[in-house]
Picture 1 (cartoon, rainbow, N blue to C red):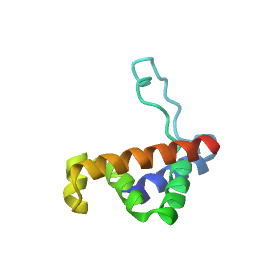
Picture 2 (cartoon, one colour):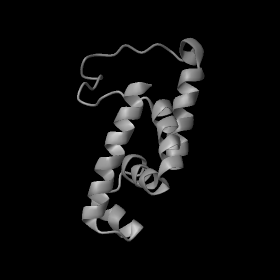
Picture 3 (cartoon, helix red, strand yellow):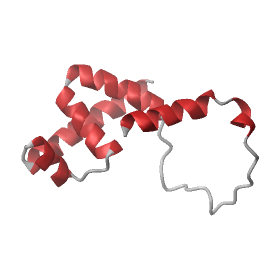
Length: 103
């Protein structure tokens, strides 16, 4: 899933001036202001750096962010306690947030 989303983001940024697609008018209802904009390419790079430092944390981020698994589902898949997964998720989020802020 990570690869699919990252490749999709790369394709969108590679298309110059919309890639010949028709222009669509957007209304305020069409634009979601509740969800923050995520730079998937920057996230992928940061996740690669995390994977070099701690592959276990990188795997957890992939499971949570890209696969949408819950903490309990990750704990089951990784054969870890729920508390360990929650603690590792917090560590990974803080580390990634710091990396993305630097970029």
